[in-house]
Length: 448
Image (cartoon, rainbow, N blue to C red; front, top):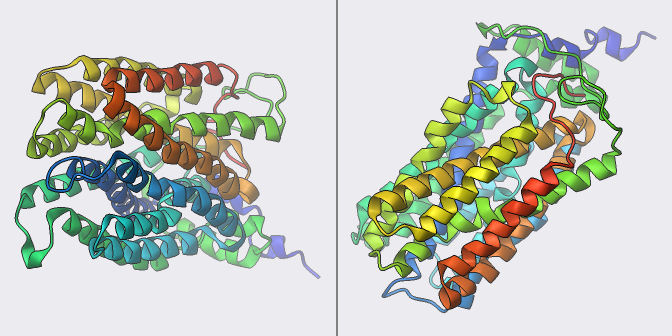
């Protein structure tokens, strides 16, 4: 009997690594970006809710608002590892599609909720999908994209996706006090998100499954067929051959490095994920509440929050040109240092220009940090466990994101922005220490 792997056209992973960027790659990037756009919109709606429910006539007690803001991340703590495990066993594409359809249903429920308790429940259920989409999208794209341009193309993906919060916040602000069909502006934000998630979720059916994942699962004939879909697609860009795979005990440039066990590697990456939401999530999430505490009226607070969302779009597209040329750990450290400076500037700012400038820099740096962290983590683990490993680490991120508002919002209201930022600054300092002990990145290299 002939070996199935030989029949199916050899090593699919090597064939994928040798491909140019094709039209099918571009289609996958576009669809992932559009799905991620609405995922990010749903997350950004937390900032809107933070501002809306901190001002009359919707003011709610701090403990209720904290729970509302944390609910989506509490759901993610469960959803991310569960769906990562599912994606490693049943496929990346179908899992991504199912998550977007689930998110659409929960968005419609949130839009029609009749009190804060119901809204909190729907946000928690939405978190099951919101928590898993980013790492699984990164895992899928890491599987299929040519190594030499993997970072650049993923940054283009997240850059385009960053338009979601911008459009969503300005859409809600544009409606203002108007209530089309008797629904408040923030409810229309959830309806917009629900429609987008449903539409683009269904389009995922048109993409092939990850050939690398199919091969890792022993489904060689299907892997060959999916790989041929990419091979037969029109060439868009020729990035050049991949560099040899870096072993777990090698640095990103191929130099020898002390061996690191998979468990220790995951623990270090998991620690970075656990710390990251204290600055990448909590600070932007509470920006609306900080602004209203500074005396900024609601409409202006939403304007500042919306303007701050332009930073990720510009920064991700500009950074795409260099992201594959700089070690992942160094990039993460530079982003952490930028957030430390911008956050301190935001707390001290008392003019609109400085508030906007510092919030843009902070939001940009945080967006780049979490994008690079997802790349860094996904490249460190082999295909057969990539989705589960990165989603499990991402669950720690969501756990931190659930805890942070519960602790920081009462601190903000009780002791002021300075005390709140002191905690955030501490987590940034701890992050930079942890990075010093992490494994080198694997940019521009093939992944197992």
